[in-house]
Length: 202
Image 1 (cartoon, rainbow, N blue to C red):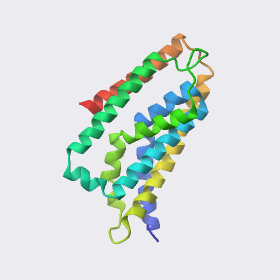
Image 2 (cartoon, rainbow, N blue to C red):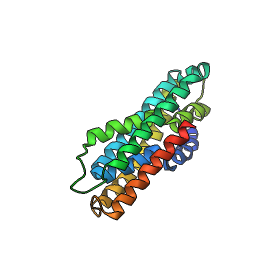
Image 3 (cartoon, rainbow, N blue to C red):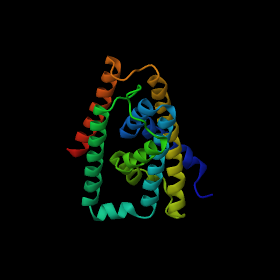
């Protein structure tokens, strides 16, 4: 076998802990569910999961060695993530989450933006580079092991973030753009995104 069953069982709760920890990915899926409904929430989650698989593939191909050799590479990723989260915060602040006055949001666009959010999420990058290698047996093929662990993490994230987006999408039907509840929720989401951007920047 490529990975020992016991190692998979050991890795499962660690990956689940990452999935259920609130962060940019989860907040983004919630915001997309509020703006575009349950389908957009799941589409955003699928984009996030796809970005996670890219991280795992790059790590398996040696990104860890690159970041170790060039510490500045991680700073570039961190600043790119901070800038993107700040942009999302601004858009969320300015755009109604729901109602007839909200601009249309396609699932394809939600998926693309989810992919970018995950690709610039240092928490996920650090997790992949710091923790996944601890479960990899160097005497076996490394890349297939990375892909297996990455698939487990991505599937867990797909379900957790998708359910968050679905819940938000159902809540959307009880909101009207411009109401006090809608504005409060929108400003709260925007503030959270802005806080995450500031945290990455400093």
